Image (cartoon, rainbow, N blue to C red; front, side, top):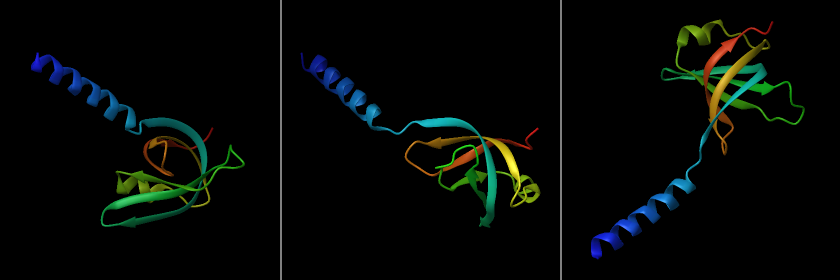
Length: 99
């Protein structure tokens, strides 16, 4: 009896906790690079989505210093990135020149 009750409570807690988490979303966008920065082997670029008039600037983090070195401020790129819905930052998975 107690095992069943404990199992039911455990399942309810898991459902409640999983519904509270913020999920990650993958997004494709045409962006303009506003600036680029680094600190302690962490590299990021600040970009603006140029396809949306009301978008705010946001940070995109890169894992690769070599990739960060070839990105130019003021240039446009097509990026695929993952981000949490409640943050203005994300992680780049793909970046390329627009065609």
